[in-house]
Length: 487
Image (cartoon, rainbow, N blue to C red):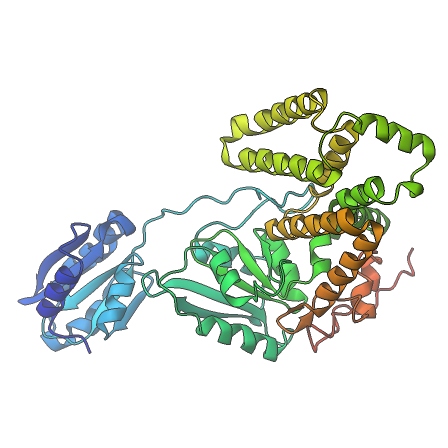
């Protein structure tokens, strides 16, 4: 229970070091003192004056007993969200979330009223997941706005949201979204239990949640998908997945996340199956080029020259004649230069970033070739490798490709193509043993699952995608069979 109102005010002032942002206003209603307390930067002065102060002035003219004051204010005050609280910790939490508290002298309960200021960013276009024909809205830093963007698309009572409060000092609001009757309950329980076990000073972004609940040291590949698109979230929920929304973060987490998910985009939903299949195959080819390109070149030029046509081998030898470094060091140096340029492109202001990196790459590449530090073919190999990683927007996936690319380069430089094969076996074994919350990471290929295979690298027509994956949902029926008699 709350203490005496005056004692609560003294305690609050002491604990906040008499913070000037917290405003304390006294008012009398029928000789009973009440305190109006709010956190000024988080609240709207218009809401407080128009709804709370004006309503209290009208209530003061009523004939009522002091013991009925709490319930009279609760019933008559002009505010759409009013709650009664009885704990001091709840009072502090509501104040720091932009609510206004009303404490009544002699009353062990307090009222909190929603008066939050509109300090959120407006809904804008997606920044990292662009699409030509899809929806143009994206998540923002406001929790309620993000929930609204999802509810606007999924209009059902079966959209369940479990709210959690995580962070000793931040008290960050976390929402776990799922569709009841579609999601597997054991998966939902596992996710919620992992979140409830988090004991940390504060959560400032969804990526912190991601790192805390996934086994980040087990695999460098991401096992939780990150997205800023409400339509991607809606599609994941309908498939039986779980979505985590974090207050103050414009990115949501989709669980589980398997490797096949990173070859799909929302653009695939709007395209014909043949066109989408071609695009996905291109992405698969780009994935393997980004992973194996430098390693295979190093293996061929260092150990397995007999596999290169004679004329081409002579051309390579002429180009590398003046290069004083081995192929591995040459490739590593150019890849490091590219990563520095890419990181610079991300950090410098947008109006200079792209031009700066393009000019830097051109000048650096030409100067390196003219100086005899690297060969022209190495510039081509590194450039193709860099371009092949661009179709993927997930930062953790790009980082995973980078680490394994270096591993393939090491294998190729020591054992040639045999080293490439050895590292490849390790790579596939590692992926096959990786799980995302109990789900195999190589679904629907290992283990093979026919329903998921229809929407993997090859996309079947939408009318054929009538089932959900049994690995994600026990309710596998997604669509009744579509008739095409009129066609």
